[in-house]
Amino acid sequence: MDIFDMLSLIGGLCLFLFGMNTMGSSLEKAAGNGLKSLLGKLTTGKIAGFLTGLAVTAVIQSSSATTVMVVGFVNSRIMTLRQAINVIMGANVGTTVTAWILSLSGIEGDSLLINLLKPTAFSPVLALIGIILYMGFKDNKKKDIGVILLGFATLMFGMDAMSSAVEGLREVEAFRNMLVMFSNPILGVLVGAVMTAIIQSSSASVGILQALSSTGQISVGTSVPIIMGQNIGTCVTAMLSSVGTNRNARRASVVHLSFNIIGTVIMLILFTVVKSVFDLPVLSQAASEFSIAVAHTAFNIACTALLFPATGLLEKLSVKLIPEPKGEDAKEEKIEIDERLMHTPALAIQRCHELTVKMAKISEDALRKAMFALEDYTPELAETVRRQESKADHYEDILGSYLVKLNTFPMNDADSHESAKLLHMIGDFERISDHAVNLLESAEEIKEKKIAFTDAAQRELKVLSEATDEIVFYTMKAFLNNDLEAAAQVEPLEQVVDDLKEQLRSRHIKRLQKGECSIEVGFVWADLLNNFERVSDHCSNIAGCMIEMAHDAMDMHEYLNKIKHGNPVFQDQYTRFSQKYALPGA
Image (cartoon, rainbow, N blue to C red; front, side, top):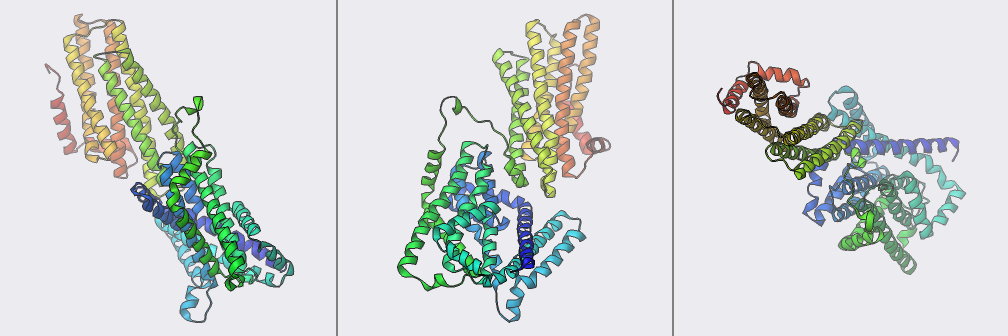
């Protein structure tokens, strides 16, 4: 093996790793919505969790990526620790699919069908299709498929280059002596673990082992312990990803590590006993891409079959290794969105939506309590409203920062659409909670200064309050249920609230001129009108955002102008709400 073979080996390895990473990332992106539906099946039982882990890993071609996602899900409380264990076991089996795909490079034969199955035959075709899709179309879905095909073709070219480069090693004495050293099972496990820990992908390290098998110097008996070690080495990625997470997320990574270590120890003992007692000839035969794929699959299935009934014990072991804290450390953990989910944007956005729903409900409850405080103020009610407003602020800070950062990751159109929608809405929900505090402060001023509105003013304020209550109801219904019909009710009702504000202001000026109320009352009255009107504005923003994005419109003000002017449906709804909230004596 000369310097040029070494350069070919390095180049092939680089192409192989780049192709695998590119293909895996693109598959993960393309499967984003599918991952959502698979995730929803996790609660149905152990088998469903196992199959989910298997399917996701088979699709994205990386058990490390699946396990990192699982750690993120557990940290974000999307998934329980018990569910995570089942998914991790499925991921260990799903990762064997890659080895079978790579084993195609070892197919031999002269028939047309066999030659067509060789990667050297179909990879150029896939690369051609991929580059046409990537460069010839603007549609993001087609581009994603193109990148997947290009990644796969690059991976297979890299695999072929590595195999060709190492063929010369069959004649190198030093290489044969090194492999004799690796025939020690324990050393083989260590080599497999270290190599995989460095690359951080068991699929990639198995592929490298398959490429080295083309030298004919690696026996089946030597390859099996290395494959066992590769399963331990792949745990490094999950362990690193669990740093800084909550206890259950760290336990998920510990389960992954303990599952692979326990399985490897048991299988290594059985392998050593069988090898020494029976002296099977097959173990002395030269390993091939196919035999390595078989060994990889058999080992992972055997480990899973052995430990699948013991998920409860693995859970207890992880809890023992990472126990519950005591005393001051036992306080409730702060809920945040795990950044690991960003690598799966569909699931990150799902989590953001869940937190936005919580934020919306907090803001709605704060507003309703503040409106109630105008009639029956209590210090306890005031404390609750202020605490809820503080929570809403915290949610906006977390969600806003997270969504901005998430937008730097590649997303499909649907995810990008939803991300933009949530970014628009969280500010409006937060402002609603701010206006709740403003209303509360008006209630406190009314109580402290013993301000009394006239009977007419109280009736008028009740009409405005009821209209605001209904616009909040339609806004929440629209957002929580993605109900565009409910959203369509908001804009005409917001126009009615605007009209009411002007009417109430005019009526107050007349009462002021007649000496029926004081200037001090007028200041409080103006604050109340402004805050009710501002709440309706934010409701209009939320509902308008939903409607405009459903129609792919990006200029909200232009869109709202269109539906207000010359739209008979809008006019009918506006008339209905105007009649419903007509002021007494109007």
